[in-house]
Length: 122
Image (tube, rainbow, N blue to C red; front, top):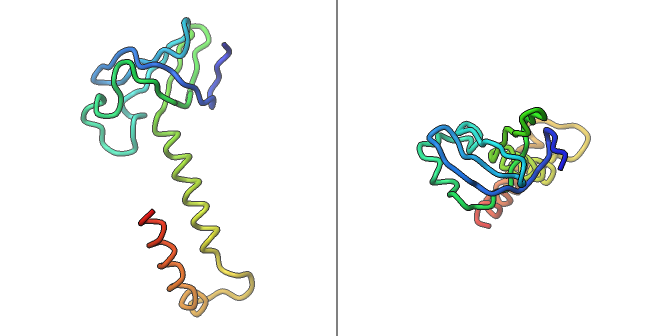
């Protein structure tokens, strides 16, 4: 299969080391999720996020055709979801077109707080 940077693929975790998790994408292609690509937060123990045998969905951030190996990322997918949620929230809370100032913010603040509370409780 022809892989390239930006592809989102599934693979099986085949090994875990302190620096990352090895993933088999197919019979001939492997990749590494470096510890820095597991999560945006601090990762003390990779096995808290993935286990050997897990099927994971990852984004290819680089692909070496010669070695048939990929640099993979779990957190890139989470960012994509988080960014989509943030964009959605911003669109819902957008101000009407026209003159915008502090009075416009004051008029909409109560509604925005209610929407944010509702989203947080879901």
